[in-house]
Length: 203
Image 1 (cartoon, rainbow, N blue to C red):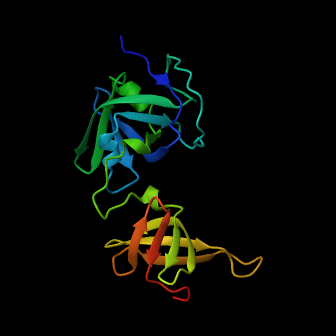
Image 2 (cartoon, rainbow, N blue to C red; image 1 turned 30 degrees about the horizontal axis):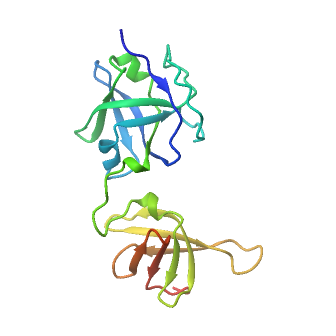
Image 3 (tube, rainbow, N blue to C red; image 1 turned 60 degrees about the vertical axis):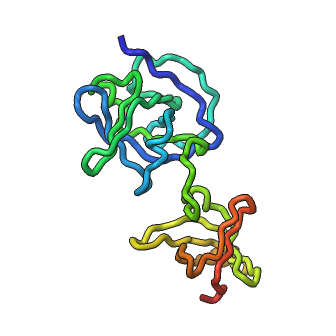
């Protein structure tokens, strides 16, 4: 008899890192679509928290209630991951309690969250995108250029999408895009929550 899955509270530092796209094989494996091209967190975290598709992420008190059926689940599910591996052009995984195709199919579309604390340490000079969101960006002269709202990949490099308060009341916020490369980025101070750049407001 398969052990039931349980619901659990989302960690306060939960980060969405991918979703389950389909079952894989007949023994409970499932396919995962990572949100990042370098999904290290999928491989390092032993516990995944699963929310249904399109459900807003709201931390909830865990009930630790065994689920008799996976269909139509509402609370975050705790998946104890047994194995994750690359397979061709996708990532596949298996979890305790998911041991046949029907069970893995019932997770289709589930959004995967993990604790930020479970991410592997980044190499020196490298940063997780999630850690850069919200940082204040200042240039060498101390001019505030705004906050990092998003990042986007343009192929060979990553670009910081920065949003600043509008210059006049009622106007739209000012958006700036700065390549996240050494030529323009002097330093990243995660504890200080700021990035220093060689960039002018009128660029």
